[in-house]
Image (tube, rainbow, N blue to C red; front, side):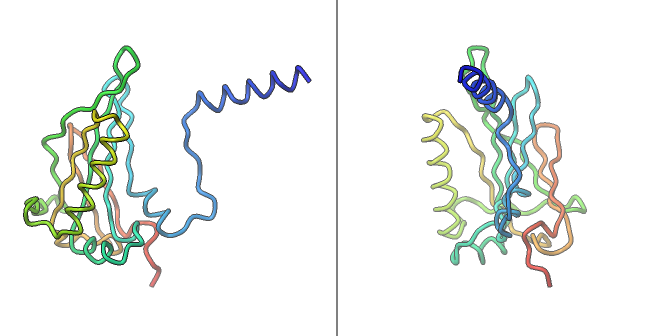
Length: 177
């Protein structure tokens, strides 16, 4: 009995110390899209950058999906651990979004956003701030899609902090034609 307890404790310790990431079992198309559209860059002592593209194939919402075909919606978060183990977040600036030919996408001013997108980004930001006890900082930006379509051949590039993060399209989760 004692050996089982020790084995269980060792297993729990191993699981707790490793990254909590698993492969999806029988993923839906939307799950495949979400998995692809979220990039996490572990920069060691410089923290962790998370870049997300909210694209139509990743959502099931009837109102949001057609709007996401007209706009490119991205978020960027830069978090890092303090020496005392607490988390901190950087203000995000200098984000540039281009297509595969390095042509910049046209950013949509916050007061020109469709109401559904304004509500979506505000709600996501509020949830993030609440989950980080008001400390988290998330940069949202919305661009006119132009030639970018998640389910057509192409590329979306997001430059931030000296790095260019890219998404090749069509993304996983798009309907096969």
